[in-house]
Length: 122
Length: 122
DNA sequence: CTGTTATTTCGACAAACATCGAAATATTGG
DNA sequence: CCAATATTTCGATGTTTGTCGAAATAACAG
Image 1 (cartoon, rainbow over the protein chains, first blue to last red):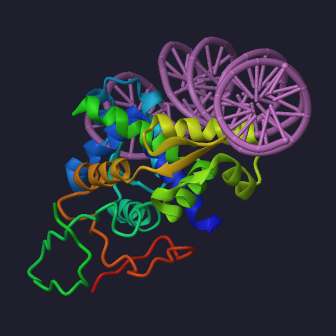
Image 2 (image 1 turned 180 degrees about the horizontal axis):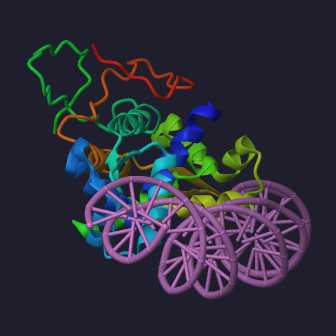
């Protein structure tokens, strides 16, 4: 119980800041291609050293990835980790179906809706 | 869009603490009936004044409600707000379906100590 | 090499957060 | 009113977070 929720607390804390949430949303919107740090700093109108501070937290929480491209460093959202976070909240922090889970958009061609009467799309 | 995320940041921050997340989970497990502050303090093995501090944050974030019953004060989880939080994360922080929604959150009401991360639908 | 660009690390500081005992505030029962 | 119970408020204190300029590192182009 304690070791699993520790990572959750880290992720929640990483997103619990105006600038970091904004940065993360930018990266989500950008997709796997990601954005270089300089671009983020300019968009956020934030000094580079401040941005780095926040990116480190997102990185440590495993919410973003980092890769080098030439002399710039590209950050991208890590969707797997956000998935875990949403899953945790839905499982542990919502009453039995009280906090309605998101309905399955079924992005790919599979049309199997055999889930046992739980998903309510509002 | 920006003013909405302010409330989200507050909610995330309220949950981004080991003790508060544990308290909130206790309240979620308890349901609308809720638990008195003293009961929470004892369960959490935490001095009452410390507990109050954390309860205030959850309260301010709108994640829990407060009501008096005799000389004790009962706290209960506010599911509507958690619903908003999960909805926000799913809508704004997950790529187009990249962050797969949760499937089948164990119909029976145990939800005690499951592995927090993995949730494969298929 | 040398200079230029992109980003991080370091250091210093203010602000916010967390902890908890002691005192204060409600509520009930006698 | 007085005592007992349940919880909060206050105050003091240590820790963590956030900010940002200056210096350091890394990569590239001549």
